[in-house]
Image 1 (cartoon, rainbow, N blue to C red):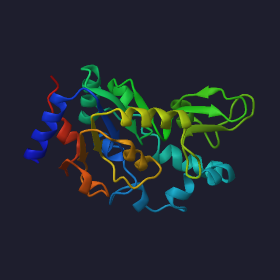
Image 2 (image 1 turned 90 degrees about the vertical axis):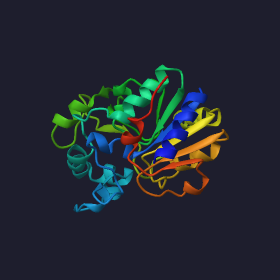
Image 3 (image 1 turned 90 degrees about the horizontal axis):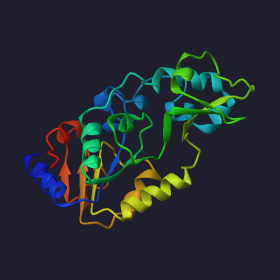
Image 4 (image 1 turned 60 degrees about the vertical axis):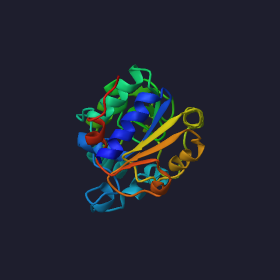
Length: 241
């Protein structure tokens, strides 16, 4: 890890257009479970598989069952930013990082102080009435019972991208632009198994690709720097000058 860490530090010292692309592994050190690890949500037992519950068709057909799972497993409102979130915010403030592209929906990057965050899969912190589009915060959803509804009678939906739904066009365009203009791309805490999000790496044309992940990814062979350690552990050792 030492050689990879030294190379990563050199790249951060040298470049001012760095972009970060992250996944669930960024937030596991904040106590939020990922989906595909041994202890992740996909390896726990429910009446339905999580990927079925978190689909648009299931939400529309069985909203009460969806919200039972959603409140129990998706709303980690007490979670706090960890070393990775904080270091990324520090890098942005120092003029080193141009943006964070995240697959996470927990809002921890913003809580740490990052301002240019592209949430590919939305956020649990935003919820809207499907009829009148009134906004509701996550606390409202957490403390509601059954299927949360608006005063107008409409059902409330979390502003998260469910299976069978497409990504937001404006968010994707922003991510493509930011990635394509970057000199260094740091990919962390993601297995790069979720598409179309993982396909955004194809737009990177910069000087160095850095991969920080506990497990192997399909992009390991293309990495200029490969560190197979927890992202929070690695970022806690980075110095921002």
